[in-house]
Length: 304
Image 1 (cartoon, rainbow, N blue to C red):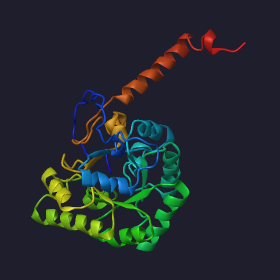
Image 2 (tube, rainbow, N blue to C red):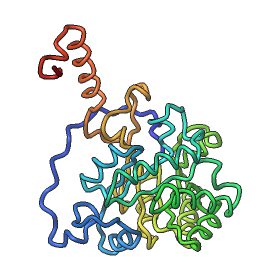
Image 3 (tube, one colour):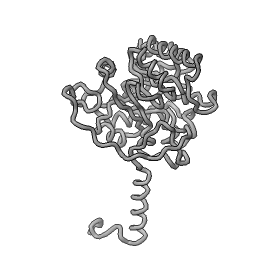
Image 4 (cartoon, helix red, strand yellow):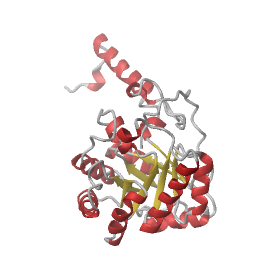
């Protein structure tokens, strides 16, 4: 997933806290009770109930623990770490070593959320065997509960082998940021009859290969709604309209942290629920001013 699509949007005020849980809250993905890990069976059951659910990215134990405590049921250790965590200008340079290390951190910081690790560019395209080797590494060394990879029909064989080996797979179609060089940017996908038909074929291909869910990125809302209705597995939208079964955002976009890294421009689909960049910057300035002015450390912060 990417947050590099240029489209300005003013930040919005935070949404009110969620109301009381439903009568069947023990089964709900968001706000559900219990501390056991969310599994693919829980995701499938939510689709059957018609329950919508949220997913966020996470790249470290501390942030992941906040989201886990907040009830977010699924956390994606996305290769979006390249843009918003590691300082790259795309997801392409992210390595398996980086993905494994940060996925393990997110797993350690959580107890309930399903943690999904992205397979970065170059880690699965060569062959299904390569995909299995690297997905196995994320499961064994990092402890993730599932992996995500990009591509529809072209990735079906990889998905099939991973699922046969017992590794749950979330697919990703529409805009696939690892293909930024081929796309020449981050254009909306699925516009036009031929492109729409290909997206539908991709969605059916990943479902038939055994994926338990599929991300739809930068897809016209009407087409995403059609895909969602045509599949038995849940769709996870990002810039794909309101009819998907779930929605995901890059957490630094959602919380207003990424402005300085994107020139202050946010994708059209991003809704900012806080302005943490301003809060953190203000805290750093207050600390600095206390140090320069001699107010910190005070007597209560000193040992004798």
